[in-house]
Length: 337
Image (cartoon, rainbow, N blue to C red; front, side):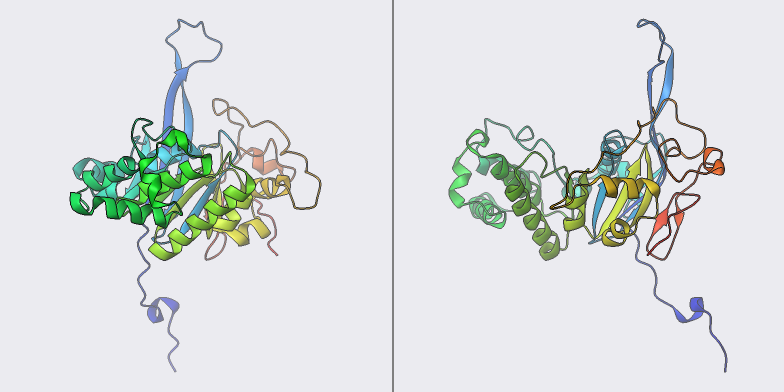
């Protein structure tokens, strides 16, 4: 009997990721520290430093990290708002900026819910006019059907039809977030990107919006990319997680698996610092984040890592496969349960 190899028996072609970041870098020239204010000397600040990330169609991904980890810069690259300094940023196997510049498909397919939802809405326009704007821009429905589609979108996000006649100033914070979601959905996107979309709201309102986003992602088959610093939100909403530290993704995988058994010490430290129900608040993550202008030798987390060994201060670990679904950038990953 002939023994077939896995490659011979498995004829399934892996699905091409909808977003693919390959060694993406983003370097900003900033004034050199310690120089006179009028000096023109600059130094490169690496906001993104060799980012590797694949996002599958139809999945929900949380991008998590402390302030200054590079989440916002990563978001701008994904949206095609900034050209990366190096590497490749692809959407459906084509450069994101190329797709954004050559037609309306990318702008229609990839919708954004901003952190400052109220600031993203023109206060002089009614809610109905705000939601109708993308309908007209992308010629999705006729003018005769516009009001009906606006009403459908308001209903889809849990707002009454008469909200169309109101202005953003007359809505609560939670209602404004729902309007921002309805406006994003108006273009009939395949990808929904949300930046801290529930931050600053009370717990019950946050829960309602998370349930709404979860149902939209499931029912509409959306690819959801959620930027957050809250592990609880990430755990509830997203199937997959990417953890960032100082411009790099240091661990990826299924959310529950990563949070229940972190492989990277930074992931474990974030998990330990997260508040637990019915337990006192734990200590915040110890140590100061190094300056991106003066990164430590070797692993950039070694100055805060309780498990750092000698080689961690000499060799810079790259993101590599830990298992079929998980990857980690660590020379000595934590033992998995």
